[in-house]
Length: 249
Image (cartoon, rainbow, N blue to C red; front, side, top):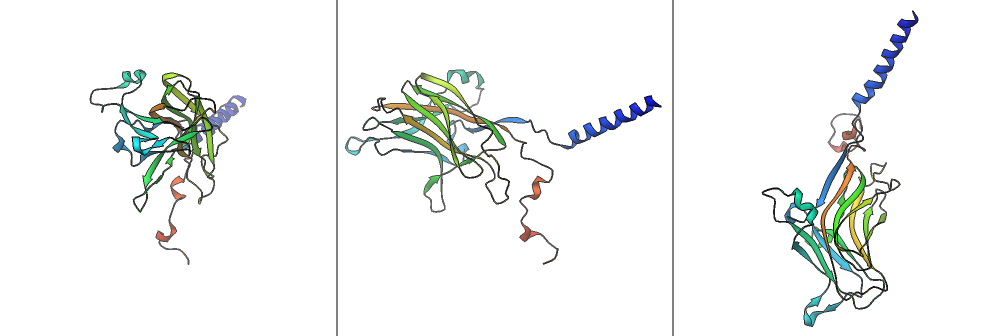
C-alpha cells in the first residue's frame, strides 16, 4: 500500500511539473538583433544624423564645416571571416570633427527620420524584448575622449551608459551591459511599449587636443531575451474596442 501511494505521488508531481513547462514560452530565448551594419543604408527606413556643441569649428570660406559624416569603405579585420560570397561591399559610418578650443566639447550620432512635413527629426529605434547587452565595433584615434550609449527607458527617461575610453588605435569590439534596474517595458497599456535606442555621445576630455578627430562605427547590434515580455493572451492587450462587435453600450 505504501509503495502504491509513493507511485501515485510521484506521478502527480511529474504531471504538475511538466504541464506548466509545456504550456509556457521559453523565457531564456536570447537573440542577437542588428540595428545597422552600414553596408546598405537603404535597408533601414531611417538615416543617421549628428549634432555637436557650440564650439565646433566652422569656416565656410574654406569649406571647413564640421562635423562631417559619411559612409566609408572598410570593416574590422576580425569580421572578414564572416563574409560570404554575394555580400555587399562593406562600409562603416565615419565622423570627422574639429573644435575651436579645448574644454567640455561633445557630439552625438543618432538615428533620424523625416516627419510629415519632410523635415528630419531624431528617431529612436525600439528594442525588442528585454535587452541584456549592446554590442558594436568602434575605431579609436587614441584621443582621450569618452564614448557613451544613450537609451530611453519605458518610463521616458534617458540613461547614459558609459561604453569605452577611446585611448586606443584602430578597431575594438565594445559590449555594453544594460543594467537590470532600467525599466524596459511599461506596466501600463498607455505607456511606451519598450526601451529605445537614442544614439551615441562622444565627450572630449577638457585637456585633450580637439584640432582633428575621427571615429568609425560598424555592426551595431544587441542581445535580447525576445520572449521575456510575451505572456498567454499577449495579443489582447492592444485590442481596439471601436472595432469590436456586439456587447452592451
